Image (cartoon, rainbow, N blue to C red):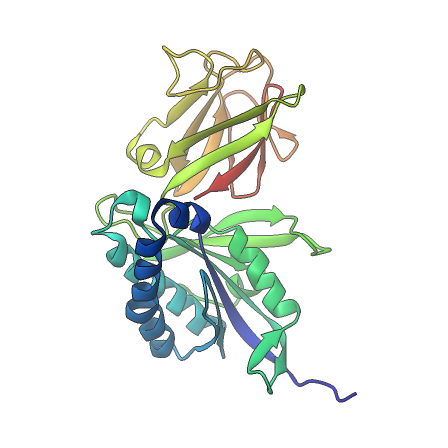
Length: 296
C-alpha cells in the first residue's frame, strides 16, 4: 500500500459555540446568519491570509496554512470581523466561534483534497479549550509567532484532552487593552456555565453572563446567601460568601473568600484570599459540589 504524503502545516480549526441551542431557538435564522458569516467573514479572511479551506460545512471549519504566523493573523482577522458581524444581532442570536491553531505534521489525502493525522486532531482538541469568540493555540505555535503589539499570549496551562496521551499546553490570544464598547475576539462572550453534581448525585448548574462579569470591577460573589451573593448556589456545603469570579489581566479567575469547605480547581486547593485561573474544561469544586466549567 503506497504511503500517503505528509507535510508540516499550520491548522486552524473552528467550531460554533452553542450551535444546538441556537438552532433550537431559531433554526432558520441561525442558518441564515451562518451562511452570511461564511460568505462575508470567513471566505475573504481565509483568502486574504493565504489559507486553504479544507472543510467548511455545518458549524465547523478546517483551514490549512503554510505558516503559523498566517494562521494566527487570519484567526485574529476572523474574530474581529465576527465581532462587527455580531454587533447588530441580539445577544442570543450571535455567532461565537471557538478557534484553535496548531502547527504540526499532517497526512495529505490528495484524491479527496483532505487532511488528517495528529496535526489536525490536536488543532481540534485545542479549539475546544478556546473561549467562545476567542482563540487558543498550542505551545508549538506560541513559540514561533510574534503577535501584533495590540495582542498578547495568556498562558492557559496544561490540559488533558480526549484521545490524546500527553497533556496539551495551551495559550489564549487576548487583547492588551480590551474594550467593553467594541468586544473583539480576545474577550469571552455569551455565558459562563457551571454544571455538575453533589455527592448525592443531585445535579447543580448555574450560569453567569460574561458581559456582567466584564463590567464588574469587583467581580461577582458566589455563595448560598441570597442577600450577600451575586450568584446563589443553594447547597449546604457552599458558604454564604464562598468565592469570587472576576477577570484580572484578561484572565478569568476564581478567588476563595475564606469558605468553610474550600474551593479547588482541577484537584488543587485554592487558598483563602488567593485566585486561580479558570479555563474551559476545568473542574471546579465548591464545598462538596464538583462542577465543569463551560463557555457558550
